[in-house]
Length: 78
Image 1 (cartoon, rainbow, N blue to C red):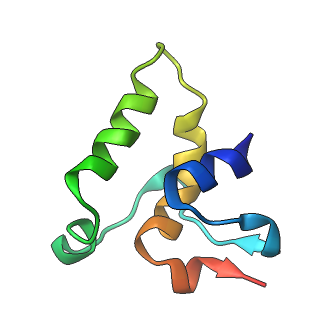
Image 2: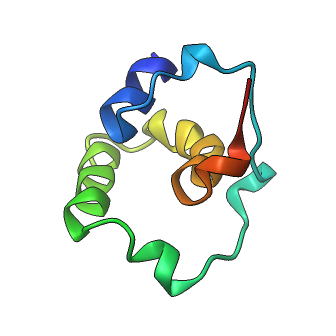
C-alpha cells in the first residue's frame, strides 16, 4: 500500500531503494522555494487524500515522505 501511495503521489518506484531517510514526527523546516517547486494542485491532491475519513492512514505515509518530497537526493538510498 505504501509503494502505491508513493507512486501515485510522486511517480517514484521506491522498491529500487533500500532506505528512505525521514524526520521522525514530521518536524522539519524548508524554504519557500522548496514548497513552491510543486504546483498548488499537488498539495490539493494530498489534502483530498487526507479528507476521506477521520484518521486516514496516509498521514503516517506522509510522515515518512516529507523528506523525499522536498529533498529527494538526500532521502533515498540504494
